[in-house]
Picture 1 (cartoon, rainbow, N blue to C red):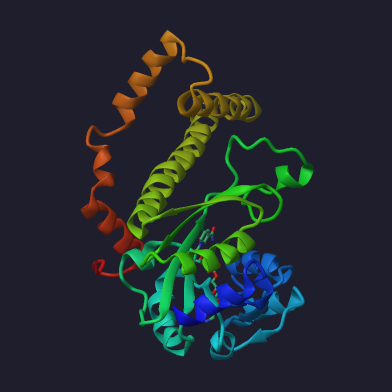
Picture 2 (cartoon, helix red, strand yellow):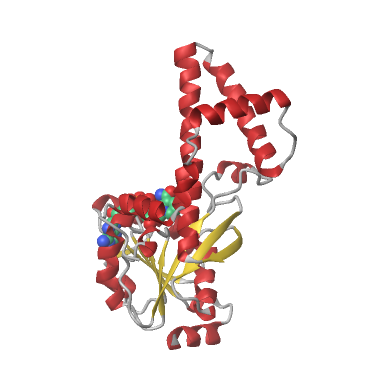
Length: 297
Ligand SMILES: NC(=O)c1ccc[n+]([C@@H]2O[C@H](COP(=O)([O-])OP(=O)(O)OC[C@H]3O[C@@H](n4cnc5c(N)ncnc54)[C@H](O)[C@@H]3O)[C@@H](O)[C@H]2O)c1
């Protein structure tokens, strides 16, 4: 980590000395992180291989360079490409990265599955945005409008290093707090813990429950015939109270509500649902997401 040590020692908090490459700069995350990097003090290079993506990068006023040029001499390389190509893209780019640099991915699946090319002297980091909390006290129109995070609403981030190293963490955190700004805090965990958070906790469970709520709303309106506005108003308000009661204990659920909740759990939730937290189940879902036969850990 000699180069990084020098970068940290000579720059301190002077992030302007860092060079950051964004690969996949015209994609959904690529555009988001680029918008924030663009206004930072970093030197930033943008690479994107699809014509439509290149057009989006140029329309935002940014120059597109090829990936090899972007990566050459960069301190941090952000891979904002689809997870299914992270293995191939890292195999192409990691050998071109300078010693002491950091490969930063935005989702733990490929790192967890052992798909990323590794090389002595190139550190691997993963950082996933938490998105603004459902309980965030938003104060401005811009904060209300920023549902995803990274624009105006403050959010937290969970990050991991393949091999823990304080200097790598310091440099990575400078980039992470920039790409996902405004950031309240970066929580450092292991790659496996990050993989349990995403997909298991937030996609397998939370996003699935969100989609189930939408299906339930459609059923209420289309099958039972309740007016859509009434059903939506009732559901959206009750989702708020259900979350604050269950997650923060804001109010007790009523006795009758507990009876209905028990009926719902018995009718909908399988007894063995917590198996999704087992290692073999995590490996299965991640292999499925990455379209590979098995994870390599
Ligand atoms: N979309 C989200 O909400 C979200 C949230 C958090 C993390 N992530 C992670 O961010 C990463 C990117 O996801 P996305 O949803 O932005 O994908 P995307 O498909 O929207 O964008 C990927 C971009 O990479 C480009 N690309 C593909 N191969 C390339 C290559 N070899 N060289 C240069 N560019 C290349 C594509 O043309 C595309 O523009 C993934 O790791 C994903 O898991 C996504």
